[in-house]
Image (cartoon, rainbow, N blue to C red; front, side, top):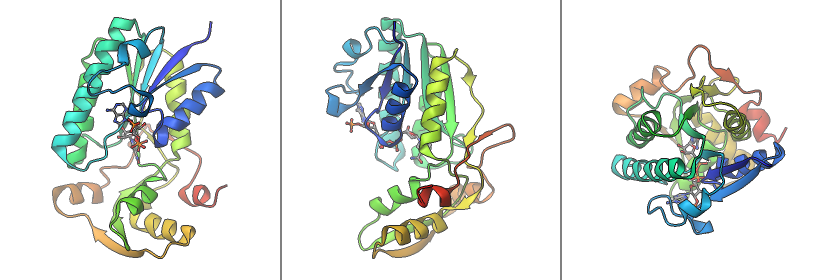
Amino acid sequence: MSTNIAVAGGTGLVGAMVVEEVRRAGATPVVIARSRGIDLTTGAGLAEALGGVDAVIDASNVDTLRAKRSVAFFEAATGRLLAAGVAAGVRHHVALSIVGCDRVDLPYYLGKRRQEELVVTGPVPWSVLRATQFHEFAGQLVERSPRPFAMALRMRTQPVAAREVAAALVTAALGEPGGRLPDLGGPRPEDLGRMVRATVRARGSRRIVVPVPMAGRAGRQVTEGGLLPGAGATLGQVTFDDWLAGV
Ligand SMILES: NC(=O)c1ccc[n+]([C@@H]2O[C@H](COP(=O)([O-])OP(=O)(O)OC[C@H]3O[C@@H](n4cnc5c(N)ncnc54)[C@H](OP(=O)(O)O)[C@@H]3O)[C@@H](O)[C@H]2O)c1
């Protein structure tokens, strides 16, 4: 009998890749997203979706930089997923988190901390995979910048291909619950500002690139390497430049 893996946020940037990787592994994906009629924050449709599911990969997200919205989303979504998961007999909950979310005081990260806390203390055997920023993160920043600008945030990061993160999540889900897994980062550190400039150039976009320093405590924490993967991390193969060149 095929293994059923639910992918919360399975229509999102990394979630859609997770769905492809689930299929590639010979398992059956169950996509959880509002556009599929399932809402993580209200729980609508969740119990039905998790019927017969062996493992859940949570790659859902909320589009905000604000602490309050981030905490509210991850608390509600994670709480609903875990409660429905234990009721459905899910044997493994795999959450995608962010390297350094406990070291860097960005408001959005308060939601990720709450998500991790609920998973770690929750009723379903779990794994948490923390990944660094995706190569696509630079493009997401461009799209979220007010036209005609592209905000080139000066941030030290060690970006990873979302595809490699998706594959690692599926490998984790098919295995035994492993607790906190080694951090997953890319092959080398980069400046996010350079990644934004390179993304704008590669797209042939006319956006005006504006360097934006990271201010305050979070800025200092990032400058000190707070978002870089620690010792013992797993490092992906694909560099940002190779990814951008479509290699
Ligand atoms: N971007 C990065 O660089 C990065 C790096 C490391 C880790 N992460 C983590 O990776 C995760 C995914 O990020 P992403 O950028 O791939 O996300 P994304 O592209 O914004 O996708 C979000 C997904 O969540 C779903 N969703 C949102 N609200 C929902 C709700 N109420 N009920 C059900 N589904 C809902 C969306 O589908 P609908 O809109 O149809 O509901 C969509 O499938 C996040 O937890 C993030 O913290 C991101």
